[in-house]
Length: 450
Image (cartoon, rainbow, N blue to C red; front, top):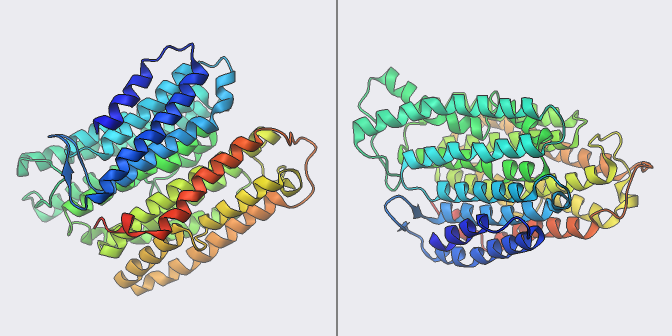
């Protein structure tokens, strides 16, 4: 882990006068640290790095995703470095957030994971408040903090109870739940998973996400969709692995809320006029499917959950990046005003089509593999879930095609700046899309973690 952490900490010590060189050094180091991290793929068992950190296949995959998305965030945020809005502070926040996420994904102790889980909120909040677009960013930051911190306090209490009864909080092997009465044990498990359900977020606890996405800068949206939602899914996966039978009492309730919530979010996407808000509600729908898969506790459900985390992290991050390019070119996120992009940006329209196709799980992307694994595990748990899974799959294709046709066809607006950020957008889209195709050639690098 030192090969990742030490170079990234050194970036924080660089003088602020070399902004553009610092950007290139940051991207180079993040891509270079990708190479030693991939060596961990040869280790199918847990590899302890120290007393407080460890890596296995799942954490290694998410660490690589963190480095990759962080590098692409900096590329997408290049216009910020030509403004007087303190680019050095912006880079410091991005690198600090990446460090917190890497440490969280490699923490071997539940209490250490909780501390890092909460620490990741601070740079995210500062990104939204400091570099957001509208005055409503203060309200979005308030929603983010209130929802996530309020749900995290019961998790701290649950960890204290666990440590008091079991004497250890290591995430390496399965543990027995505390010896508590049935009702108290049920409340304890609800307290343990509530923070992760809000972070993912599960439907009914999702109101903070669209607000945060709409007001965040492009880097904030990319890291929210690509990494921070995955932090909640990672915590839920870890707890489900540590206490494999504790999800059973909550299975009907959480699965029903997640699946029907995904249906409702898909319907909201069909009538959503805001580009970023549509992509945000799409994320809630995908996370609902992921939550239901994790709650089944089956091998395919857990494998599909990790595959969905990687697929959605890359796909949604790319969609927010390319949507930001549209906003920079038109100064509007409205689907009613951003029409005719196919006539103005024909090359970028190709990437719109490819990324929207992966978002609706078209082959040969790993999004299709993840949905096959998740749908199979959910149906094997209860066949009545077909009533929700059918509309989810259909509506995902419907709002994805609606997004493409609404933005690419029609009469172009006279507000377009057709020469703005053309090569940068194509490069960012390609660097998101290529991993989605490459992983399908050897998917066992992801699905074999269980």
